[in-house]
Image (cartoon, rainbow, N blue to C red; front, top):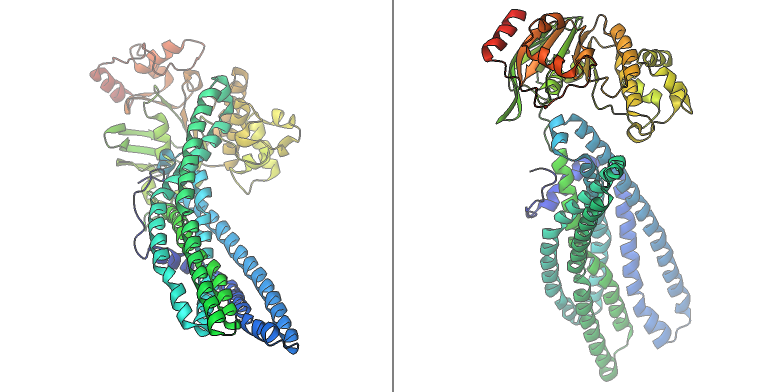
Length: 619
């Protein structure tokens, strides 16, 4: 089940307790003194509430019925003290609960991010980033709400209700029994409403997360939206989702709020019956009214905690859905964890070998098939092929974004499946065809390549990437904020910053996935000259559509439908006019234009025997 799939599961009996136990086990020790404060304040609030009802009896009897002036002082002092104590206790309880809740939200936000960073690339391929962020934001409050509802309900409302019911029984057992008859129908109403809310709440969370995610994605791609005049269509889609979310929220409100008229009606019946019977006893039997006033006060005061306790179950169901969805995310197991015996990679020369590697993103769609080649240490190896040939997949496998289905990849004779991913990736500098910049300054983004890099090293890397000139023209130079995903920079400028980030990493292996695809001819020439210097002494794997960028490579690998069909140098491959590489080169022409990935002329009808000869001849 993916995170975007509405679950039809119902909360199992005791699941709230199970989730609460997990929350307390993970966080309880750090907040134990705050819990003590909350419980103490709640008990004070409960005690003063019960006292307010109890003191009604002596107040009515001694002041109004017996007309004793001396009772006014202590009764008024008691009332004032109770309300002051209640106010300070309520304040302390609210602040302590807010601190616990805010800490829980921050703690789970950090936990979720740390866990997301451990998940494989495949998880993010299957999950929309905007929707994931919105869903996490929607759900993370469930942990806080579940704990807050439990604490306030048990320590405040439940204790208050028990105290007031005890006072009612003390004042008049017969009236207490009659007023408590509203309990069974109220419990039935709570169970019915809880079941209905449970069925629709998770779906509501998912609908809202899809809506927020769609808005986020639309704003991030606003240039494409406007360029393709998609405003109207996207507005209609957002309107439809917003209407669906509104309808679902309205349905939740209609169902959950049914409890209010039911509880009010039952409470009204109970209070009316008590007043009528008490009036009869006072008028006909001549009993003092103090006990009756105290009883009625306790009954009225008991209504609010009883109603909150009844509504608590509905709120708990909502919070449980949110908390359970957070734990579904946290419980996802990373698919590419390091093996228990994984060791630190010791990469010096950086020779890369692919040994009969096969891989597919799904079992029935292989991308690479029995691929074998060697990228020599300190040499430049170029990977050439039409779109879909498996070039970028090859680079992803080398960085262990995915694990091979069969075969192996070694670096300096070390199987990358048996070394830690952290040490492997720490020895690789990567420049993707889609440059990505993070929030912060230009200097920050280059420093992500190596956090210990000095300002001088950052500026040197920028010069090597032909980025120094335009960076210094920015309003704040290297300290200029780049905006969301570098929106303040052009595509070529973003690419040069990402190349500088790779240069400053000082890694023995350099991966360039169409690294100059976003540059104009002049910038490309400058970057190629810089990269030629940077490549020296490093094992470099270059993926390029423009064959003009790989003519000087030490070794060229030609892929077709995931298979190696040719390999050699530019000269040796061009020597055979019928080779796939030569056909690519003729299509591009002398200008070095982009490789026409799926153009009809590039249907390499090279016979299998010729392909095998090419591979054998150049191996």
